[in-house]
Length: 84
Image (cartoon, rainbow, N blue to C red; front, side, top):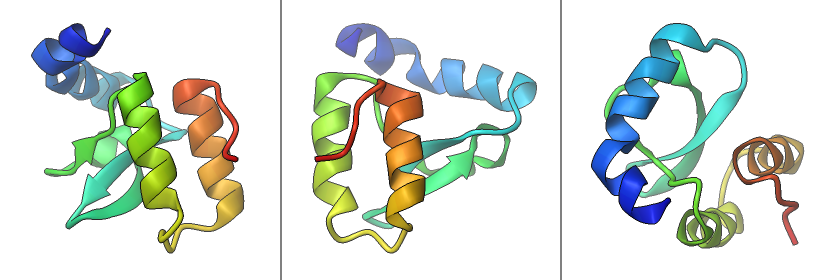
């Protein structure tokens, strides 16, 4: 999945953005964790739905201004994991 995401992650997110409104995806903007609806992505780097992406999410979540409840929902949606 890691290699596939590196090759096609941008295309996947572009397709999701045109077809999927609703849940927000975890992304990095200016070095900070944000949750953004796929259709509103504009230059943010979406975290990969991989173990490495999860590890980065957890690390960034510690200093994030995003409410914990929203972070929990984002982690559950994107990785099917719970924040520690």
